[in-house]
Length: 274
Image (cartoon, rainbow, N blue to C red; front, side, top):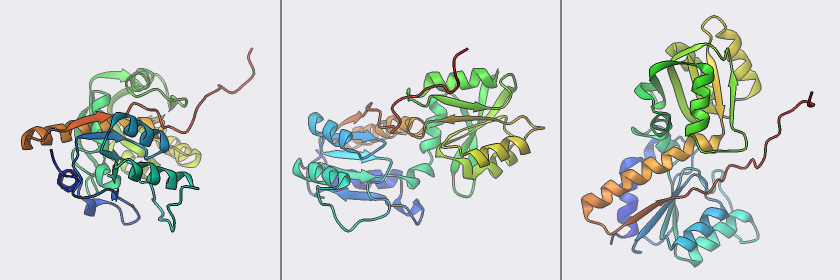
């Protein structure tokens, strides 16, 4: 069985930490380099529910997309919810490793996994300089309504579901996708000439401006839950580690958490009933 340092080296080869944004916090949060690793759990968020799942599973390593301490800290006291996660992991000899923006820009990366979940054919990066996002084609044209329904069916269920802006009957042939928060990429989306853009965390003003500026091109917007757009990466990443494990002859079992850690728990349509 591999040591933690060997598994981390393999993960860093997939998602080089130097490709992370300067503000990001990627890499190993806790773990003994010489410890043996037999089970790995992939998840989006390093929250207590995932720590508890790893303990029950008997995992030696959790790999998450989101950092535990993105803005740093001066304490890991168990009186704080993040400190409790650290204490839980160390108490049960579980390491935690993070691949965030270095996984966003990887090839394949987060947006490739999102495109794959929707059965889209990737034709290239949305931003060739950074590798963020993907431009994709559909095998057959669909209406915006049909494409949104495809996203709702293929992505994990969340309280938010799928929000749509644009003419529901507009034809969609080419789409841009970006896992996670993507409204900073609108200029690139417009320049790409796609018919629709699927991402998460679309704010009012950028979305309004995008639809107004794209009135002639009929750009459709599909806003999914942040967690839902990034969860497919867990399956992709797990498959990558499985392949590495087979190649090295490691006795390693890889799991993907299906625990929904999206923070929103319910949804109610606004407006009084007729």
